[in-house]
Amino acid sequence: MSKSLKTLRHEIDSVNDSILEMLNKRTVLIKEVVDLKDQTGSEYFDPERETEMMENVLRKNSGPLYNDLIREAFGVIFSTSLKYMGISYQKKMLVSSSSDECFKSIGEMFDLSSNGPIIIAGPCAVETPEYLETVAKHLKDRNIKFIRAGAYKPRSSPYDFQGLKENGLKILQDVTKRFGLFSVTEVVDTRDVDLVMQYVDILQIGARNMQNYELLKEVGKTDHPVLLKRGISATIQELMLAAEYIALKGNKKIILCERGIRTYETKTRNTLDISSIPIIKNETHLPIIADLSHSLGRKDIVKNIAKAVLSAGADGIMVEVHPIPELALSDSKQQLSLSEFDDLLDCISEWR
Ligand code: PEP
Ligand code: MN
Image 1 (cartoon, protein in one colour):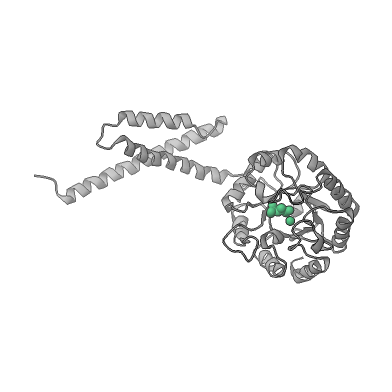
Image 2 (cartoon, helix red, strand yellow; image 1 turned 135 degrees about the horizontal axis):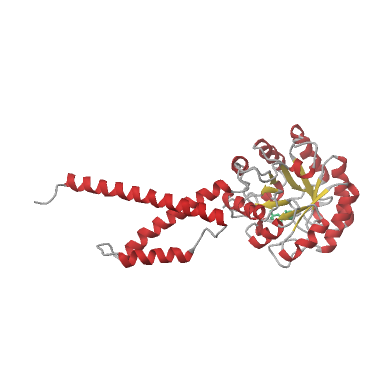
């Protein structure tokens, strides 16, 4: 007489219990391996070992499950263990909120008397010394401490203005020193890091390079604060992992920057992900600012969005400012004139 459905189900339940017990037993062993590797500083991931384990399993398989299905099932088991290890790494991330490793505020990085939100303003690119000087004087008069301007411009078209390179850095350094400001400029190539850091205070990693891991490691070897922008198609987690690359090389002065991501919306240049600000503040202890110019690509809503990001907890804003925006060689539509910048400052006075 064949077994009843009830009996069969009962037996399956008990096999499930055994699989569950085995899976957790495997997990405990994996945890021990991770701890051992931590102590000896060995590589966590070992592709050869994964292959060897799979081969052993397939060799011992006596059916009725086909090897293809066994491979699939054990693939899931192995990757579940890797995921489990991934979760334990997360907790150990240097940039995570549970770690005390990195600088928590921009004020601390620059010995500023206040830890309130900062403003980084300046033209998209260094163009003429006169333009930069005009902006610097304007900032100084308004007690703004950070000036931005690109000397290496990563442009979508190779025919567009690419920046003044080292000449631009020299102009930026000269103006910054004369007006007692801190400067921010983008570095796009690992080979330029040493040069750029001689001229500026903050190294910017642009959106296009957020996942250029060699560049992240290179700026991670310096002790210059790094402004790390979110890539246009990067998740919040990927931004945090990019920051981790910098921190792992020893540089603990990291400022994150939300600058909008690419969505199907065309009314703004990118979609500013305001929710990323409180999420990053919860999950890391890094300061985060919002770049209003490159996210919005337009000026008419900058004031509203500035208030929104500061309300969301941003540690600062970045905005492009040019003495004659119409004549700017890049991003002319989004750069604020000096008076538009003053309007913005009025609008956010309660935060300053
Ligand atoms: C910039 O800040 O000059 C710039 C190019 O920004 P992003 O990398 O965010 O596009
Ligand atoms: Mn720009």
